[in-house]
Image 1 (cartoon, rainbow, N blue to C red):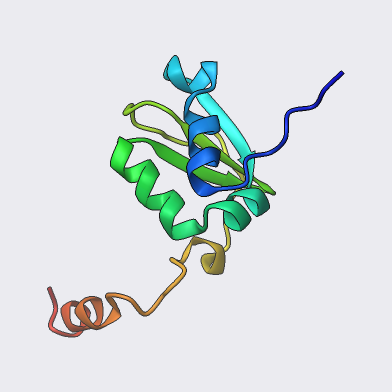
Image 2: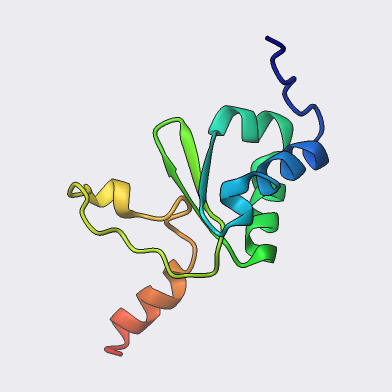
Length: 105
């Protein structure tokens, strides 16, 4: 049995991902985060997902891509700590929020 060789370029990786039957049918596909980061990179990946109007979520070592423009919501999930719920850059937008709080708005 011959195994398919993994895509070696970002273009080939995206082509392989979006040409899968599930992606073509508007379904859900998943890939290992380390492969996405190594072959494509987070920023190009995020831009391509946004360009297509899709959504993606991370869980464990996988990224799950919803290959349609439908909204995504979490039905059931574990409670998060405050630190987990903060954005990756918690100070982004902090000045505006602090100003509103201190000005009573």
